[in-house]
Image (cartoon, rainbow, N blue to C red; front, side, top):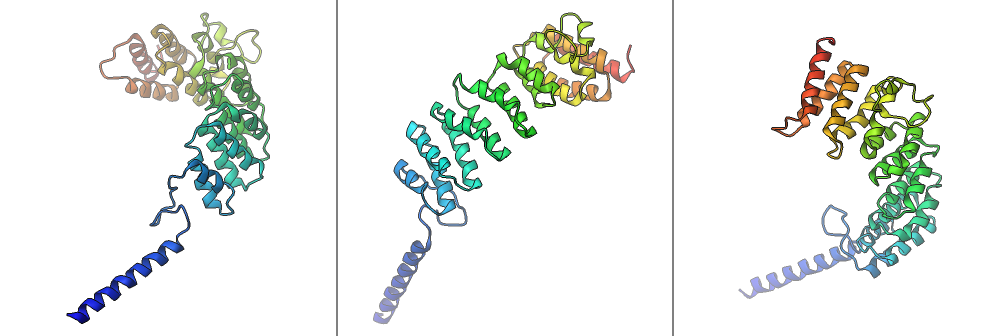
Length: 297
């Protein structure tokens, strides 16, 4: 019996020593197991972690500091960015500024819009779009002139996201200059007059030569139909667009762009309507589908 008790004590001591050694081998702020998820840190711990030579520790600290939406957090992240970190850390830090969504970050993000890497410029625009401040819209508009197509596209989408209706003329200009993402933003925030003219004949003009206001309908025969349909999809899905306008949009699509692609687009739109809906726009869409399938009137 005494021998068994001694064996049990020795075994327990061995297990304890093994556990302590395992704990010492684990890096700080790393959970046990195979995942590398960040543990909750205090603001002080997170700020100190930003100065660590361990890249993963810095990433965890960025994630933690982004949960403290204060000016001090913005300052800490900006200091990290200005220290010239590796690209991986730069991208994560810019993302954190978007999560914090504090106006104190606008100045630094405007500088990052001139970063050498397009990916970082994209991150900066996306972060700006999360901040509610009147200084954001002009910066996003400036992004429409970036040299990289992905940056221009992000700028266009971001203007739609923040509801920048004053930017509609610039979005039309960007679309004309090869920014397809602008079409969806126009459909997302534009007025009915941006979708189509009250005079069908006016929508048959070349938008690149028209004087005055452009409409998305003008581009039906001057741009890839798939891109234009993305803009009209936004218009048709909006509850603030009157049913009568949606009916006219569907009519214009049938009259000026009748094709299998438009038919399939309308079929998908009809199927997306809620069950029991019987609006005039739904009726008109079904008629257009039949007309296109039958080869027209």
